[in-house]
Length: 247
Length: 267
Picture 1 (cartoon, rainbow over the protein chains, first blue to last red):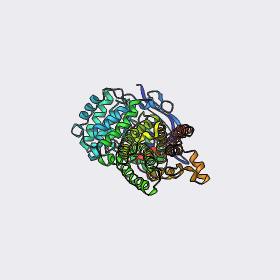
Picture 2: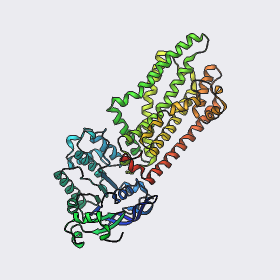
Picture 3: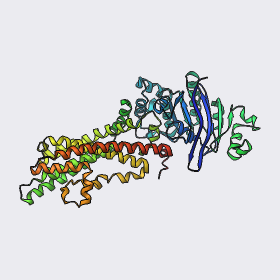
Picture 4: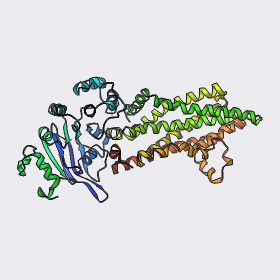
């Protein structure tokens, strides 16, 4: 399967502190990869580097074979993201936000695309409502609609369902899974909801103290390490990473 | 450079202005108050001075031109601050937009907003106090151009300061025109300044504009060599400002400031 993202020997140091320590991984087309780890493990740092808003200390990131460091504009044209900590401006309406970002991504037939996304994410009734007036769940859906504007080949989702109710979260998961299966996208997905990760991910990477500690199928990985569930494995990674492998 | 990306930044600003009286009012309210205040002041000075010297084109014209500079500068910074206030920097800079495209969007926003302020000032100054820009002749063109370019340059520097030092640093940028004004001789000839201030004045483009304004009023005409030099200086300031912004942006990407801005964790 063709790669949409390749991360090679990526590191980020802040002085003496090592946030990400020589990690390498790939995301293939039609694949959802879960990036897991406790708070401070380096997940958001990794995503920030892939988004081009944080310069790596060393290593290489390519999106569809395009080197992010050398051709940032072309590489980011093929990516998009949604993160719980980056809501769209609350002082613009849903339509205005999507229009502004659609222009930035150079989306063809933008009005039609916006209408389709408003329908897909059940946002039509909020078209002319300022984003700041919406609930956190609705804002998350808008952020996801923005993330889909340019039909990205690489979609980065940082805890995308954190503020959604279980029913909406499930709908979103199904929608993203369908998009990935039908198109040419790959997804890197962070979440603290292990049930969600197990349901949606083809593969997971466990990050601890900036290193990839474990990698594998989320439905098989717990048993391989003598754990009952992914959640139990997560707790072990967070509390006793040395029991799983040298760091 | 993608024009649609630069247009997107300007469109965002248009959307914000269209829906907010609190944003539209400052475009002209403060400059209108300044013109009215200084208009009556110049009228009074014309009466008590009892000389043939006309204070209207000297003082009121200078106030108008200086306010125009301020509007241009704040047009750039306010458009940038909208992204700071709405925690939108991460959203924008994680897209394919380039720094020249983003800054071009801020400049286009500033052209639109400062034009509104300039128009209101010209109408008030001419209508209420008889200030005629025709008296400046052809020199009006370089006056406006130099102040516009310098305003853009200072606006870009101000955005770089906020990007580097964090949202609280916006309080450094509001007084910037007031800090510069004593050096450029908005209200008095540069010859009254001490030597060190005159040295500073010589590297600030607006100094040549206001010296020329006074030259025209005195009847000696505009200081054309000075205006040419001020145009060159203003261009150099634009290049320097772009360089500073690019350096600060690079620093922000290297240290993670852009990502952390979103979390409002920059002190």
